[in-house]
Length: 250
Ligand code: 13P
Image (cartoon, rainbow, N blue to C red; front, side, top):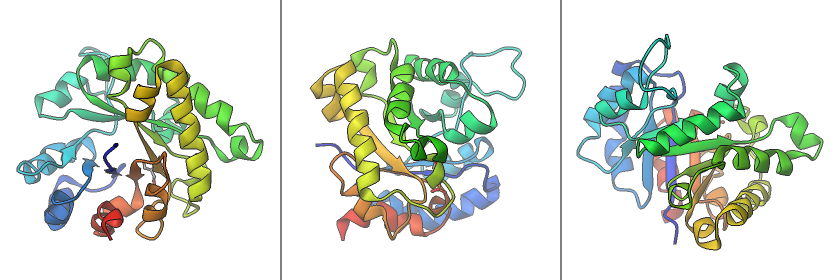
């Protein structure tokens, strides 16, 4: 039985001070959830948010990292640096990184391998843009993103990855995928994992949905058989996140 996972990706929002105030406000609400809860603040707020949440089970993760341990990579942050302040989970291959910062499938794959080699929990994002959806090529597209990311990942490492299906057309647009649309893709991702590994790994791996997820639609989405929770953007910056974390309990 897979446990519900609810994660907030804050993207480039909140100063350390704002992050500290907000997380104090929602701390008790997210700490007592019947779910694994993750918060992904910007790098600069990681320490503050970790300090506030240190006596809870809520996990604090990074939104990105680089594939090398150190060196001449201006502007980048390594897994070792993150782990030195107790950060052990990281979002990899978010569509904003792929589209705005031109991260290729190869780079996403290399980051996944690096995170796993460091014992970190990667949240691997995949998802199609509107054109790919309208051309009805989205299933092949997403499954090729998954196959490329998981190439050479061992079965014992594969089930440590959390996959997030985030259709680009649903991110920040208010245009949420229906439960059926999201389920169709998440079920297909699970079949791809079964093909690559085994039924056991496919049954154990967590697959989340992300894209305009909010308190009004989370319960329906999280009740789909192959959707194990959500990666929440805008609504994760608001007190509403507490209600999303608890949505299946009501
Ligand atoms: P929104 O919930 O704001 O659409 O963002 C989703 C997302 O990109 C989470 O990573």
